[in-house]
Length: 186
Image (cartoon, rainbow, N blue to C red; front, side):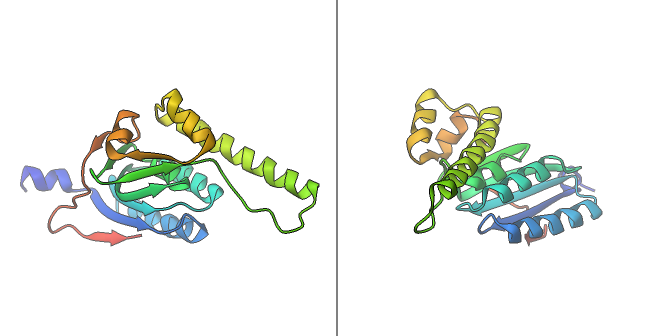
């Protein structure tokens, strides 16, 4: 067996796209169970998502970080909102030169005619979500004070180079499954 082929044994390549929601959670749970049964040692995952539900993203972040194999994440286009937290589950993280990231504070729409108590519950939930996601951002990446100021008031957009400078990605590099290896969609 060639040295290159031996290095690839135990590695697998996947794509994961769409909204971060309960359907994605289910798909990832199923795929990770198969990866574990197949004896995968390194899972390379290309993520394409504009975000979704905070709780589902946090669930996937915690789940993927604790799997019994290494997870390597790639951004080939756009990873935004709670999908950035999902992306941070990767032990190694990469982005194509043309990829972008976007993070922002949580938001929700109040129902028409909502009473003050209802609005208070919505605000408290949003603040709790922001605390949970911000703690992960502060733990995993190195945003500048200027980045945090932007994040406090509006969407924070990062190019692949920006993401590298704040340790969101380890390197600007494309997702490139090797020829002859199976590529699976989650």
